[in-house]
Length: 181
Image 1: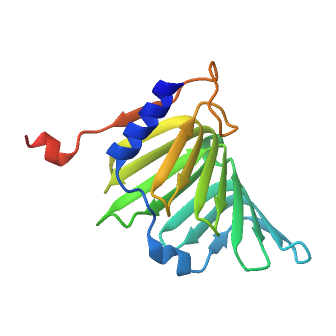
Image 2: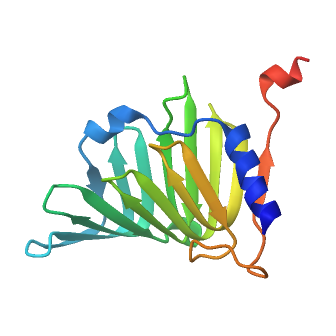
């Protein structure tokens, strides 16, 4: 268990900033789908069939999307399966030109108020420079906090790591500065 937390600390230090583009939070949310059902009383939209959500540089795809809105106007989204049985997201990072974060899982939950993305079951997340993968992690649950520049990976889809719950996987590519030495 201690080794797991040490690995997460090392990954956090090596991975560097992972925050999403700040300008996205001021952009409108656009959704395309084959079908939509709206419950005005509960403030719930349900989209089905080839769902594509965009908000600035944020792009999410799924087979089903449920969006709720709280009284303050914050939006919460749950994306379920899609191509290959997974939902996906991709977003530009503030870290520099052509820096991206992308992920996939059977279920993705997005909290627009605190800007946290949670990936459940067969979760994968990658950092990219242009189209080149620089780092990637896999586990049953990944929580990505774009404001705090922090993510965690767990071996169960409950958000907690348990002995015997499976393994996480991380691939950390060498940085350009290190390659030149």
